[in-house]
Image 1 (cartoon, helix red, strand yellow):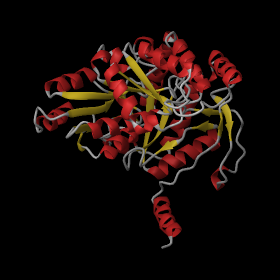
Image 2 (image 1 turned 45 degrees about the vertical axis):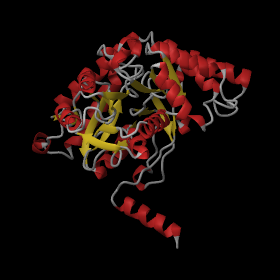
Image 3 (image 1 turned 180 degrees about the vertical axis):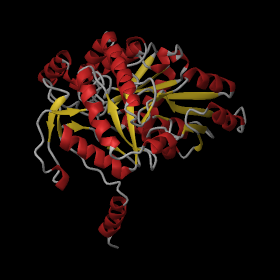
Length: 419
C-alpha cells in the first residue's frame, strides 16, 4: 500500500479544481498597521517588486487589540514573572491565577454565572458540542447550514442525529423541530454573525422556538464579541436576549486580539463540560501571559464605544461606495464586507492583481470555506483604516471589476448582493 500516493492523488485532484491554498507570511507591524510588508510567494505574477507599504484588508484583529500597548505590556510582564508555558493541563498543574481571573472576567463580561476557557474557539465549539450530544441520550441537533466547521465537527463527532436548516430560515427550522417528539432532547446550534457573509441572526426568534419545542440553544458569537452590544458583549446582548441563551461561545482571538476561546453559561453547564469534555481535560492550558493579556484586552474593549462606531460608519461608507461603483457584494449592516467574484479562479486572480498593481492585500476566500461558486474577497475594516484608504481600495476594485464583469451579469445574480 503506497500511502503517499493516496495522499498525493487527492492533493492533485484538489489542486486541479483550483482549491489549493497559498499561505502568505505577513508582517503586522504595530507602528504602521494597516500598512506593512509581506513575503511574496514565488509566482510569475508576483515577481514585480512590491512596495513595503502594502495595505492589509483581511485581518480579524477587528479592534487592533493585538497592538494595544497596555495589552502588550501585560503579556510581557507576566512572561517575566512566570515564564511562557502553563505547566500542563488545568487539572494537573496548568491552572494559574491568570486563568481563573480570565474566566471570572468573561463571566462578568457576559453577565453569566460561569465561564470556561479553551485553547481556541474551534476547540471550545468542537469539544463542548461533542460532549453535550454524547452525554444527552437521544438528543437531536438542529444546525444552520452555514455554521462554522468547528460546530459541524463537534456535532459529527458526537454521532447525534442532526437536521440542517436553511440559513437563518426560521420557518424551515420550525418545521424540522415540529417533526420531532416534544419530549425528545433537542439543541439548536447557530451563530449570531456569519463571518463569510456578514449576516446577523434574529436571536430572539430562535429562543422562542427553543422554548416552544423544549430545546437547548447554543450560540456562536465569535465574530461579534468586542464589536456588538453594550461594551462589545455581542449580538445577543445587543438584542436584549443574552440571558436567555443556554450556552454562548466566544473567541479571544478576534475582537480581543489574542488567542483562545471560551463558553459562558450557568454554573451547572460549565461544571458539566469541565468535568466530562476530553478537549478540555486532556489539553495543556493556554499560556498564563495570554490569559492575562486577554483579561486586560476585555477590560479595554468594554470602553471602546468610539472605535466601534468608527468601524460601522466606515463599513457603511464602503458599502455605499461599492454600490455606486456597481461592484457585487453581500449587503448587511455588519463590519464584514464580502466582495463577490463567484469563481475561485477570479478570486485568486483579483487578490494577485490587487497586490501587484495597488499594494493591497486581501486573501481570496473559496471552497470549502464557502460553498462552491461563491468565492469572494472578504474585507474587514479596523479603526486604523482611514476614509482615504477606503477610497483607494474602492477605486482599485472598480478598475479591476470593470474589466471582468458586465453589468447585466451583476444584475442577474441572485446571491443576495447589491449591484
